[in-house]
Image 1 (tube, rainbow, N blue to C red):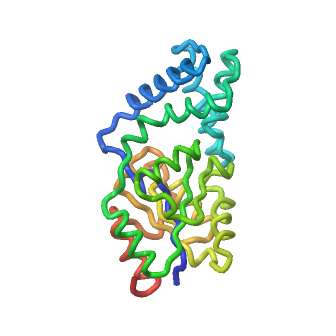
Image 2 (spheres, helix red, strand yellow; image 1 turned 90 degrees about the vertical axis):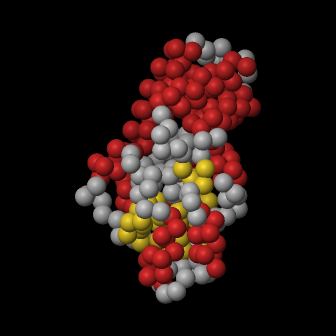
Image 3 (tube, rainbow, N blue to C red; image 1 turned 45 degrees about the vertical axis):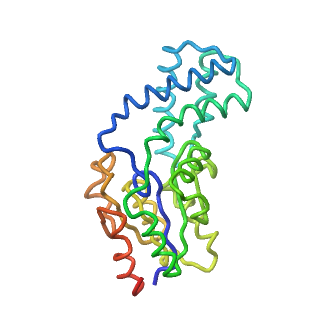
Length: 251
């Protein structure tokens, strides 16, 4: 019997165009970041900043995948500026620069087909709905949720940048259970597009798991294929209602 469903966000509930060139997108985002920093009075050399920021992002991403701790975008940006000898910007300038950094990419995300219908069916079945998202910036996630019509849709709403832990760390899944004190791990299903974060994390936490494959073509998934075996696979989110029906009765 299922009592709760936890969702990943990116490429599970929302997606970006399949033909998107992320290298081009990142160049645009970094240019917008530099422009916002300069507008806030933080003078940086663009080529030097781009090179060091990219290196710092790669470094902390690799570290986060090893220790399952989140290194936030704010932390990485501050470390980059410190590396370059730039005066630390104010909290307001830092927040504005990060908002500018994410603005273009946020415009590219859109809800997956059948998103609200699927969530509505699960709610009508009496299931609790929660979110666990690996993301470097909590405000970025909040804006994406509002944009997709999902503000307030999930309780709990766990973002790695806010809680300091990343999937597949089982501790972040335990936080969800603590928000649902009467619900056991084996009464919860995690739904996501990433084998090494969503599926492995759910398995380590003792939860059911469903892998959504429509937008799961990243190299990391290919590397884990055959090693991390999801309990169920669906191509489209709309198929989730049928899968859940098989576990808990009629939805």
